[in-house]
Image (tube, rainbow, N blue to C red; front, side):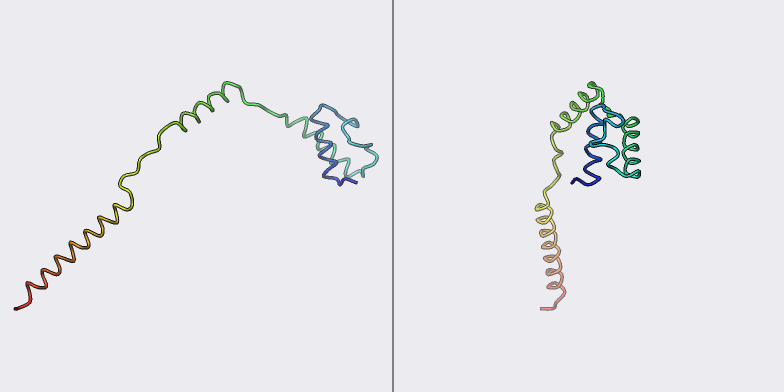
Length: 110
């Protein structure tokens, strides 16, 4: 036998079809306890208040156009790739090393 969640799901589907009151119950309302029937009444009240909504077709079309325009825009090109940064750092380190080596050899007496 289905549990209460399954019964509420069936009730919700019947409410969406426009059925109300005892006709919306999946089985006789007397098969449920008073607390369970209160849940079914709450679900029916919520179905009355919370109607499904759809955005206007013009808004959907404009959203689609904006998304497609953004998707077609080329991606920004990065500056130098990271590998070139490492090459520059290595060359700079070598230059500093060469300068330090020359200074040390000039300062030494022969």
